[in-house]
Length: 358
Image 1 (cartoon, rainbow, N blue to C red):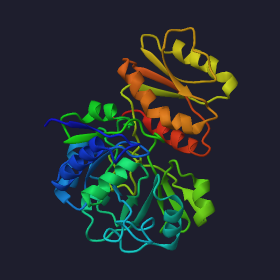
Image 2 (tube, helix red, strand yellow):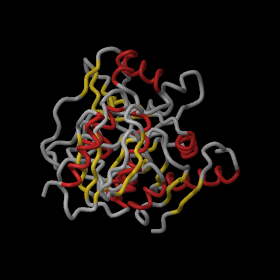
Image 3 (spheres, rainbow, N blue to C red):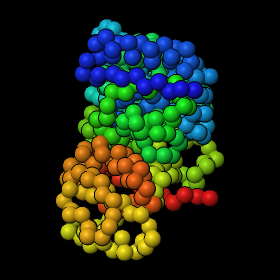
Image 4 (cartoon, one colour):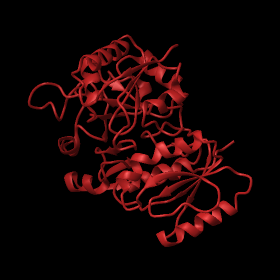
């Protein structure tokens, strides 16, 4: 299979070239094919969510296990309730009040809601569980693609399973070239980490995966909410997971990832100590802007400011992939604060750093 690279100008999606590219991608989806699409979080690998065979192709292309559910993306419909409901009605049996409040506040945007699924949703999407994850992306290209295709799009991240998520079309092609039909290339994504996943059907509500919509923002809109406690004890869970992103090892680079927890004033010395403890390794560093590069030889990726978690999130996966591409066998990364979207950055780093199990 030859993977098409279809260029789109996100600022001019009504231009002739952009319209042609989106129409081509929409036709592929309607025919049961796979298209990687940009969202405001990461690039997603899309298929017609109502076509069980197309959904199975996502799992095959990614080498994704059946126990890991995927998220369905919808677009607004016309009319007064468009912003809240969009294509949602055929996919879910009910929408709790808390979910409606969150949709009104954060859709379109990087928030996934786990809602009671209808019979129209293929079992593979939910890993056989009763709730389906749905969201309305805010990226103009993603929304236009969904509208043009005329179907909800199932789309996990467009990478090989458990590998670092893609934030550019180049990242997608590195993992999936020849395995999918097309990628819509609209440049780098905005947030750089996946959507927040929340179950609004529980009391208190439960966040299964932190993201750009924070716990504090959710609490302000819809009331009591907690972070999920505990984690799978194995890379091969005996039961389907309740949400995407709960796997013990996820988002991981090829290199071994070492996290450093220390006050900012101690990080430089901790990095030097880490380098000294790794003889014979090709070392990469996700280096915060506050720190000078160490004198010892290492590959450096300028990550961003520790007090700017949005910047760290946006650059995280690009940094891990860049250091992988330079042949690093170990990546050293200071662990930032877990405040706001920083909670998502810490979550991704801890999962990415978990040792491989044989």
